[in-house]
Amino acid sequence: MLKTRITDLLGIRYPIIKGGMAWCSGAKLASAVSAAGGLGLVGGGSMDPDLFRSQIRKAATLTDKPVGVNIPLTFKQSPDLVTVAKEEKVPVVFTSAGSPKRHTAMFKDNGAKVFHVASTPEQAVKCEKAGVDGVVIEGYEAGGHNGREELTTMVLTAHAAKLVSVPLLAAGGIATGRQLLAALALGAEGVQIGSRFAMTKESAAHQKFKEFCVAAQSDATLVVLKKKIPVRMMDNPFRERIIEAEARGASGDELLEILGEGRPRQGMFEGDLTEGVLEIGQVAGMLDDLPTCAEVIKKIVAEYERARRVLPPVSE
Ligand SMILES: Cc1cc2nc3c(=O)[nH]c(=O)nc-3n(C[C@H](O)[C@H](O)[C@H](O)COP(=O)(O)O)c2cc1C
Image (cartoon, rainbow, N blue to C red; front, side):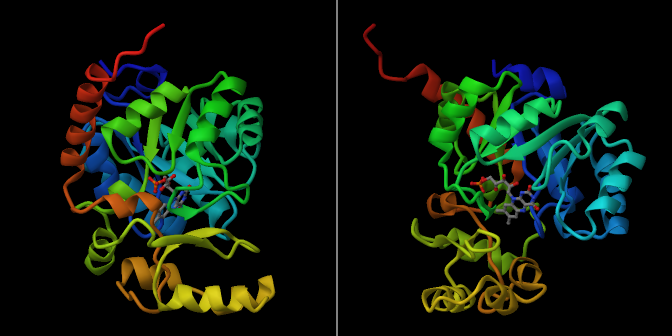
């Protein structure tokens, strides 16, 4: 029923991808999504090369379905993560940040399907020119790092669909079946979901972080650090310090100094809700439970089917 070019290309049942998420997405989360009919990605962003390799191998023992990886290309350890994914012959590689030209041909020659993340329609065109099999178009609603251009998923998806012919995965603010239907109506052929899966039983994030996200209201997240690395964060005392520094005109370097090292780990993985960085998307405000990945996917697909049938009739 939910067949698109994405399901054909990736050999999966539903066009639902679980994005790579620093401090949330190891083998357990990625394999749970793949086993439930989507495609899970092991998120290399918060791993050293040895851990990344062991999580890729572990995921393969937890499901017989394909599991992919995400590699942000701008980190110190990125070149080593690329080597690991190549050596392990990972079947699907999602790269993000950096240039899609860097590794696409190499991964494709190595037998992988390759996607790159774009936050503008123009970047999506560049991805296509670089030879990717598909593009993730990630709107400003998304959790984690954001595009500087602040384009919403609604505009970005419709615009990119006019310019690009490879299949698109809409990302940013998507957690329900109605939103999947909307993404397909806008021209995407699947979705990449982050926050909803960060807030599941299998997510590696700390329980305190997950429960904080469950309690979040719709206005709990804001994008800060726009001068340097725009990132959507939950309201907490650390984010307040960043906002205060930004308000008094702190330079980009000063902001980076306040950020320091290791705060995302401290917040999301170790559960320090006061001093850690807590990354989650706008959609956390409408989520109020911590289900399993299988429950998430079942609910999204059932709601999608229902919504498709009961869309209000439109006169031609
Ligand atoms: C906690 C968290 C960490 C993330 N880390 C990464 C990452 O390491 N690499 C990446 O490409 N995207 C990362 N993302 C973005 C997701 O892969 C996905 O595109 C995004 O969450 C989609 O928007 P949503 O959160 O509204 O579902 C992260 C998102 C979250 C919530």
